Image 1 (cartoon, rainbow, N blue to C red):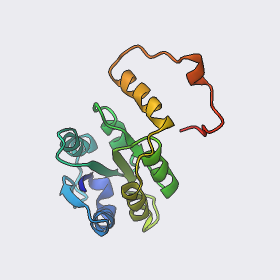
Image 2: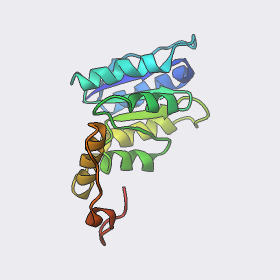
Image 3: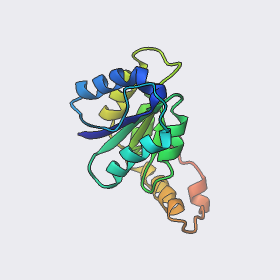
Image 4: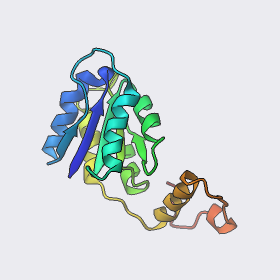
Length: 165
């Protein structure tokens, strides 16, 4: 699996941990990040990795900034990108299994050592479950394309096997 990675200066301290986790999972990394705390702008860094994903040069992307928020917000501005900010394994599992997230955003600050590595592992190991989740992603795609989005009454109700996301 080819993974685009990008980080800004605020995530330079966790860069080695994240790259190590990617390597342990056999990922071939296309690295757009920085290893310095000299300031760079997170939108510029996110764009490099996300564009590689859009062009099909990589299978997924992993982004990191101080909170993960800036990278996540930026990535989700690009067509076809479903970026999830995950700070624990459960969120990473659900982001992949239910939302088919193709980009993972991580925190570079105020996160316990080893947490990002664990989250990366789950993100890479979890497959999309499709099924009932696909109709929701289809709706997200219609919204992204600015098509009319209407919720049919049956779509607004939960079935007995439907636990949400």
